[in-house]
Length: 260
Ligand code: MLT
Image 1: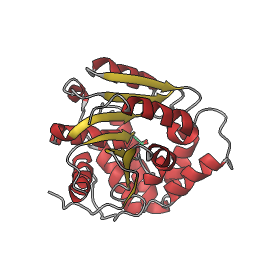
Image 2: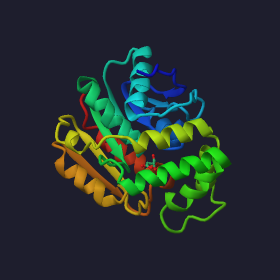
Image 3: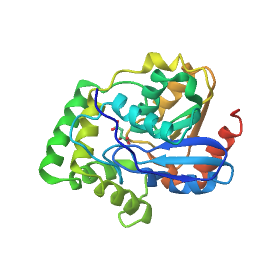
């Protein structure tokens, strides 16, 4: 088993612990606005996953279970037994891996622009090719591949939201990007796990997500027992950046239904 990595994280507020995991290849800064806004009522923790932001980036394949163990170790170090744990995209894959490991530590969960299915063979090959490109060219290669698909229509180069995302991607190390691409490529199909979720679950997606179609969110919400489905209009794969206030309001509404 791979050793856990001590994650860098940011924390704001007091109250029920709410852990917000970012997607690939971003960082905890993805949730900066939501952390600040929800910090009035909750203890909001935004880790940088292994290989991202300011966390260490060891070489190797970052399997979702490995990333999940890092987050559990962080919560152990913060003496947090139970929390609401939400993940964006790859962060959602990690939430499902964490759920399989320790269901009793969840107060509720969130799957944000995420999915439960594994990659298709074509998707897997695409990740291996991108990993090779990143090995040769660096994080610029993944920025060029992802930025055109990250947002709803109308987002122009130079827009501060797009440039913020570009900055996060370019700040991610080669080892972090390659480890995550290879880890996502080998992740298991977690579709059967959805039916085991017996805590409140927020399934939220941007209506114009070009990376994970909104139909996947609708399908996941349909099989989770206590699901809240929220579709954010005029947002793509990163509604927390594209429509931060609307996203925070949706999170706040959901969190108000969760008992500690
Ligand atoms: C992410 O945003 O985390 C990734 O796009 C997810 C993926 O590539 O499957």
